[in-house]
Each structure stands twice: as structure tokens, then as C-alpha cells.
Image (cartoon, rainbow, N blue to C red; front, side, top):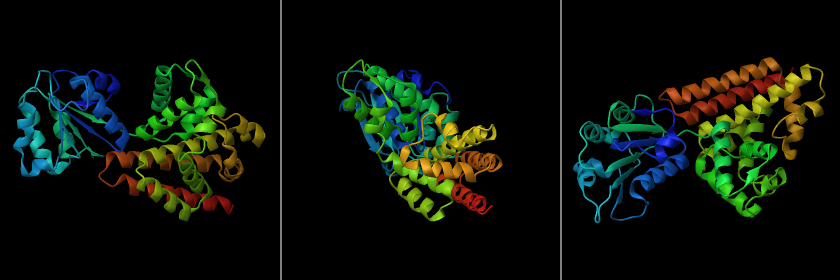
Length: 343
């Protein structure tokens, strides 16, 4: 079974008939968060030694029977067990394919993996089985970030202004684990339950985080600086940032440029057009944003957004490495930027 909607509800209360769940995707933070949430939903805790067992999938290459043995084992004191299998890939797909066709025992088996193509044997096994589920974990976009931020702050007894929310979304990346850490830092900074978080709070707490290195890449693409693109992109990916989340940030930047160009075409001045943006342009980048808004025509911006959309589709639907596909798109955009600058 493929979980394509209602993922958070499923994670909070998994169908008891489901015997095995595959959590995969480029957002390692979200994969880990969902692994722990599902474990707690079934076993009540992630560190109960009698109800939770975890091992690396490579173990199954030497001992395929271990999966069935652990799934059939009874917990001391009763209760359903959870068997967590880390870092699975197609090299153990046959083991899981046999298990999901005829599960043994009562335990819930939760399997984690990184990005898997639609033709992945492991992914197909879980998607096609009636008693198993496959749950993709992609980088947060503006919509999911909005929900994560509001829900987290609500639990802390806090609210946030619309402008502060927009600024926070703009500075948080697509990695769920990093987002959680930044929100925890913001909540600790504001302190008082019942407080309303404003733009100044976000700027003071989150505005100078590592997210600004993502801005460095975004502006390098708009400037047409291939050397900076390769250097910063390589660093971000090396630090574990999802290529899809980086692409989403670049797309957001070009949509903002397109919005400003539309206002300029209507006869609005640059300052007035920029003031309409939410969140506002970070002051450190205002000069570069203005220069890019003048350099990129509406037609070129439309083409840039098409290149980004094509890169995202290819990254999610082909076997080619997402990291390479997205870097190639950025370099293509940089080439367009250099051409626009010579006009």
C-alpha cells in the first residue's frame, strides 16, 4: 500500500492490520521523526528493550531468517513489539518481499531507507503488499512548513504573526530535524507561554543560522556565479541538506523575482514592489535582489521556473541521482543569468 495522503494521521495512529512499513526519502530528519513516532504509537516508547529491537539491514544479507524471528518474538510483559530495520536497500528487497507477502508474528516491522526510485524492488514490494505500507518522506515545502511551525508553536502555547511566519518559512530549509531544532531554539528564546512571536524574534534567533548559506546559493544562481554554486551546493549537500529542499528554496527565490517584475511592469517602483513581498527581503541581500530583479526579464524568469520544475520532476521520477540533476539545473540557470547580464 502506498501512503500518498494523510501521512501524519497514519503515523500518529497506524492501521493495526499493517504489519510492515517502509519509510524512505531524501529528508533523513523526517524519516527519523516518523520512525520514532510510529514506534511510540505502537510500543509506547522508543527505548523499551522488551518491546523495541533495532538492527541494520545488512544483517539480513547473512541471516535472512532474523527478520521473521524478531517479528515472531513475544515481548516480556506483553504488548506489541516493534522491529526497526535501518538503511535498507534493494540488496535485501527479496527478504522483505517474502515477509510482506506472508508476515509472521504480531510485531510491526519498520524499515528505513533513503531516496528510492519508483522502480526500486524494495519500494515496489511494500507498495504492492496488502499488509505493508510505503511512506515517502520528502523535504518540507511552504505548505508543510507552515503546518509544522504552527503546530509546534501551538503546543508551546505561542502564536506567530503572519510576517514572522513568512520570514521563518523563508529561512528554514527542507530538513525536518533541523526545522525542529530551530523552532525549539526560537521557543526557548521567546520564553513566555502565550507570547506572540514577531519578525524581530525570528531575525534575532533564526536569521543568522546556517540557513543563510542556502541564501548564498540562491543568490549565486540568480547572479550567474557557477563557481559559488558548486562550492556552496557541495557544502550544503555534504552537510546533509536535501537537494530537493535546496531546489525548493531556489524556486521560491525566482517566484519572488517574478512577482517583483510583475509589479515593475505595472509601473510600480522597485522599492514599492519589493515592499509587497512577504516575507521581506533580508537586508543583507537587498542590493543583490534589486540587481537580479532588473537583470531577469519576466520571460527569462518564466523559463527559469520551467527548468526548476523539470529538474524536480526528473529528480523524483528517474533513477538518475537527484544531487547531480539539480546541480546541473542550477548551472543552466547561471548560464541564463550571465546571458541576461550581457543584454
